[in-house]
Amino acid sequence: MRTIAIMDERKVPAFRQDIGRRLAELDQEDVLGERSQRVVELDQQSVGRLSRQDALLNQSMAKATQARRNTYRRALQAALRRIEEGEFGYCADCGEDIDRARLELEPTVLRCMSCARG
Figure 1 (tube, rainbow, N blue to C red):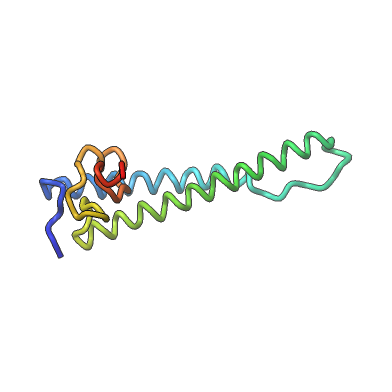
Figure 2 (cartoon, rainbow, N blue to C red):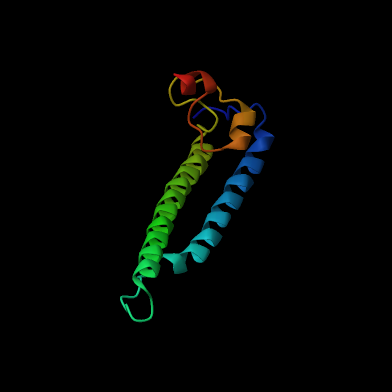
C-alpha cells in the first residue's frame, strides 16, 4: 500500500466528504426521478396518442438518466475504495500522480492528463 498521492494526506477527509456529498445528491436525484420511470398507463381515452408517445419518451429519458447516475455512483464508490486502499490519486496507466485540482473537480478520474490525452 502506498501513501496517498495527493500531496497532503490532510486533504483525504475533504475528498471523502466531497464524494459522500455527491453520493447523497445522487440518492436525492433517484427519489425525484423515480416517478418519471413508472410504467406509462395504456388508457388511450384519458391520454391522446401523441401525449402517450411523449410520456414514453420522457420515461425512456428518465431511465437513461438513472443508468448514468448508477454508473457515476459506482465510479464514486470505486474512488472511495481507492482512498481506503491508498491508490487514490495515482494514474491507472502510468502510476504517476494525478493533479490535485483535477481530482477536486472530478474525484472519479483514473488517469493523469498526459495519459488521458493519449
